[in-house]
Image (tube, rainbow, N blue to C red):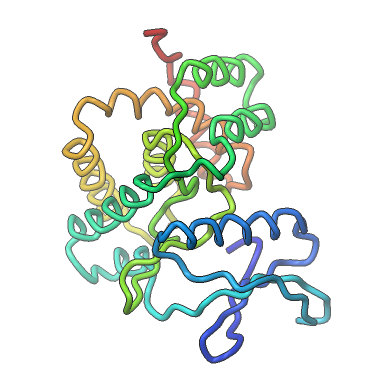
Length: 257
């Protein structure tokens, strides 16, 4: 994690300790959204509160969470801990369960996406405007969307799969969340995942989407440009940046239908 590290706390807790200089409002936002997810019955560790401690020569803030023991789904994919298709099914079913929860209390995902698109300065003005135009024509919704759903954010605990890192959560159409996940799986996967394994996982996840949402893959495709441009407002490494810029350059505007 770039902005934080996990440290043991009490016997049944951990603290997600943020780096010095990390914005205080973002910490409070993550706490609030993690609590909202837990209150909705989504499988996620309980967030206890914010603390401030001395660590490695500085005063740092963190969020205390219920401790979960177990590998991440990403670690299982890398280790071939189960067939890739089975792991992708687990990944998809958990995401679909999240989408089944009412997200009215969470912020609007389209508004958050628009703000990121405007801040994506590595993308030319014309493509940013094209992404905003496409976004305007895409649907809103009231489903809970995690906003950063990828295998490293799923912990395979003894209690079952649990989702962590709720900073980017909001309400919106489930296809937006799926489009973001596809983008991360295809372009943001850590380097230790072999190309063949990554492609197999993406193919299996895509098959899950096609079977569960017949006729909605075209809508997921229409989210590609807005989601891709918005991603470039975030800290990404150079290889991912180059890949996304190439994708943006070859992505046409969405249909007005």
